[in-house]
Length: 414
Image (cartoon, rainbow, N blue to C red):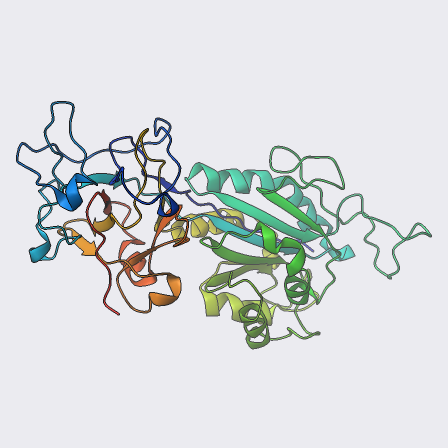
């Protein structure tokens, strides 16, 4: 039988660095600061330079000046001066000057987990996946999505028992998969090239693809990114009729129970039989339920026309790759230290004015708040949007995010 398979891609993170971007304080306690360093390798745009008096916020700390001694005036996303604290702007200093960094929007990454049935009836489908996987991955990458592919299937040539044969009754000794360069190494059966491509050498039989997604999870969990979109893909001419995950509800419950919190949301796609055609072992009713439940992509194996399915899956992966909603904090300029209590965030969706966001302690404190938090409050490396704020940005690639450095952080109320 023939089978299909899917792929995805996603954009990386946002760099905020520039030597003039930082709200810093030369007197800040070093226990709360990051190490000094030049920011010449980071990218970004600074806010405008004003001619007014910036005052002396915090005894003069946290304020940058131009080479002529003029203070830098904080700006909104649209370029207008940031309003004072009394009008709801970030910070609490009565006369604070901040530096605005415009963040560069990038798409979320994509992690795709594919199980390919190794049964003897799957020779044509396996050959197509073997030949097409490189192009599928590249199609997603060319759209600006950082994609990782995890393949669960027997390697090729397939491993054998001590007697030289597999201990099953399938005529499928050659029905394994090895992926050539550049995605795979081409060194069969050790073709993994993590992190972009990771091969779980596991035989997939007619009915157990869903069970294997769950049971092999410990071997590929480390390949997942917490902020990525996840897609399960199955390629088979059969149905999930046996095992602990023989229904859409059972599989959904099993995914929810996987450790690590990696599957807050996911989709399911596949190539399976829509009808009792000559190529069908069974109609893939369980897989169809999962595709419908998660708005995935389905291809009919009976048609033996797999290229359009791969293309549709690649497009779906790219379409789902909304904004990443996280930005890396650059290193402070030489002679300065980063003050984590003098960072603020504001954003503007297309055609709307900028909105200031308060900070919460961590992801657990987000709730329904439109806010942001550090990845690690004790040693911050990235700025992350809470889900409510992120959802406002996800589908607007023209959204504008400003990170303001130099003024007292606006905190969300308890």
